[in-house]
Length: 153
Image (cartoon, rainbow, N blue to C red):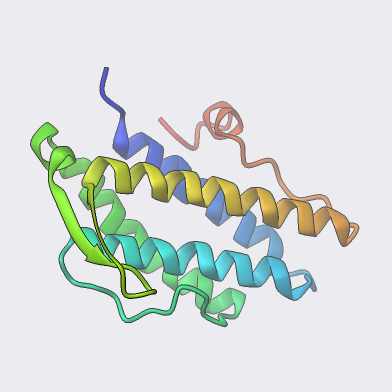
């Protein structure tokens, strides 16, 4: 069974958008905002590597929530298009890239996309923890909540 990439990226977008919209009207500590900016910047960097158009985006940018929302809006159609066009051969395609430390690596498109999804989940969990520590109750962003809400089909 192959992964349903479009569905997974619809979920990822929904979860990040849900958290971002929750944070917008609040005064939140800097760390959740920084983690959100990093999550999105890393997606841009990985997507640029897959598309063979490396991004000049720093992986830890200092973005406002509005700037993060703009970046999320820019990434969503690119990730949607990529996920909808994935074939078995494209998933196996090897991407050669240089990381932020100048080290060269090679990974398959599928491995990179799985990393992007897991990386986002990890940082959304960290953001939720920081929000709770600040006395806030973040929204549920688990996959099953997106399914129940009809946000991911």
